[in-house]
Length: 128
Image (cartoon, rainbow, N blue to C red):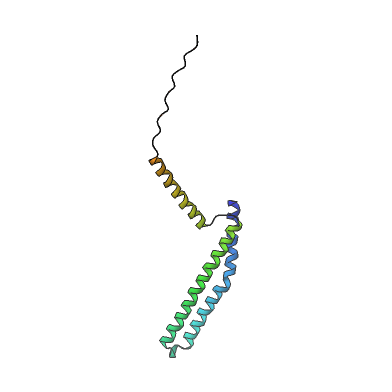
């Protein structure tokens, strides 16, 4: 199963990278438009307008990045689920449970009274 996952995950990443071309292309186009507007209006630039446009562009880029991260995250979760592999959150949850159980067992060992060795039974006398 793990070998199968190792083989499929690189394909998953390649497939998702293809899906990323559209949002990344939009970002590139927005930046090119911004540059063209600045170059075309360099002699009559109002710095407040430039700042406003820059802030809008920056907000759009941040929103797009968040969408991209969410997209990758959900796709990866679906892939891991399909392969029946645990997610990072599931593994972390199990680690916490094991740590908690280990502490409980250690505490139980400390509070348990030491057991006394059983008394030896006297040896049976052989019948004559």
